[in-house]
Image (tube, rainbow, N blue to C red; front, side, top):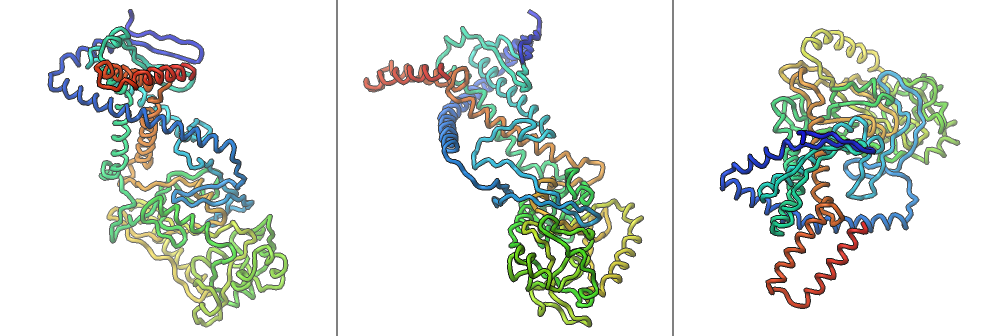
Amino acid sequence: MPLAIISYSLLQLKVTTIALNDVVWRNLGLCNQQLKALLHHWFACGAIFGCIALVLSVVMMIVCCVLAVRDFFVHNHHSPTISFQNGTDLEWRTVDVDVVNRTLAYSSGPNLESPTNGRFLVSLIPGINLPLYAVGYYFFALFFAGVFHEAGHAIAASIEQVQMQAAGVFIWLIYPGAFVDLDDTALKFIPPWAKLKIVCAGVWHNAVFAITSLVILMTLPSWIGWVYRDLRSIHNGSAWNGGVVVLDVEKQSPLHTNLPVGSIIMAVNEVQISFGVNDWDTGLAKALETSASVRQGYCIDKEVISNGPASCCNVDLERPLGDYGNAYQCFLPQDIVNMRPLIELHKDALQSSPKSCVDLESVLRFADLCSVDGDCPNTSEPQLCMSAYIPNQHIRIIRLHTLDILERKEIKRQRKDHVSELNVTKSSKSHIFGRGNVEGSVPMTDRHIPIPLRTVLYLGDPREISESVRIGCFYPRHRYFPLSVPYKIERILHFLISFNTALAFFNMIPAQDMDGFHAFSALFDIFLEIQSSGTLPSGMKLESCEYWGVFQLCCWEY
């Protein structure tokens, strides 16, 4: 027989080899007695785990069936929801805004996540609910979990003196897998306990590998800390005081040109990001939860309000940001904006209210915050508390405070022009708001020099930011290290945990041709041996046979 045979049929390609038979048999035969005894105990633990997994798999299937029946008969008419990682569920709304320009980023509509309805089992289908960029990780983890599973069967069988006849891999449709072919005759004559250890060895290996992958994932910052910084680690006097790094931004997002890959987002509005993704989600959730009728007020000089144009205030529900240009935004007195709902305000109060178009970026950068006119500081020019008027209750003004990490030579080359630009901006805009503060610089590591934070202003639904911007917490210590490596490792570990856990439990379902069926058969043989010894009550003998008959019938029907 050749060392490898390639066979194919409809939708399946299979490669079978006998080259591993003697390798596994010979190497395990050369093991000393201590190692063999250790392996016997190892697979005995696997048999115990398999029995527990058998029970849990049945319980999980019953729960899934109950949930499926409930969903079939109970119809929910609620709006689709999207969830941040902190558990906040919010209704989905469409925002129709089509203006995009320089540092102001405008939304063009949110993306909707498919909810899981609280289930703990979710089917991953490549191209449907699994992103295409993750397909490679998906198939690698699936194939590796299958190989590790079958290796457990092969090693346990050799320990129990059952020789492997062949092994191989296959591709069914697009899904990869592996298999081992054991000597069926030898399996029939070994003790039931040995058979149970062989059957449960595969799921036992999957469970151990899932736990190992979980430990590696939880300790990943320690493993890669010498190459990548964990932004969640707070170091006083360092620039690495929290934040999240931008990994990717969808091309259709208005933030694509404003958030370069590798930039660090330090805060969302006033929410400082100190602990990674959780703070990021918290900041976006708070922005979305803010009541639309209570707009933030800003102190603006009366002279600017009276002399400013009003063209940008020609807004409606279809064009909530107007058509005057993205640099200007319509502002109304804070007390009028908060007096009644936005739709009523748009119908009557807008025409008679004092209003003005003001550079929104300048307002957010330089103006004092206020709730009423009395909150504004006493300056040479009297000020009013004004609020941005946007007749759409789902649009938010979001400030993303970002830090672009530049190398020392590039910063030295640009620093003079950058500081000069800040001074010009300060002198030209300070008269509008009675003060001229600019955002301060942050201390850098010894490889960099101080540069100021950059603020990206975003008008739109915060959920679109959550969907279109991929963020992480690891940043390379040197520019030669790829930014994506920690996240590729993290992603493959997630898939390995998922697939190995799934194989560890669902392969133990007592259905025909699955490990659970053979494990239940071995358990029944053990039960018969105990029964033949006379230690069981006589009333249990007939019941056990009846249970076995019903079980066989159900499995064959399955």
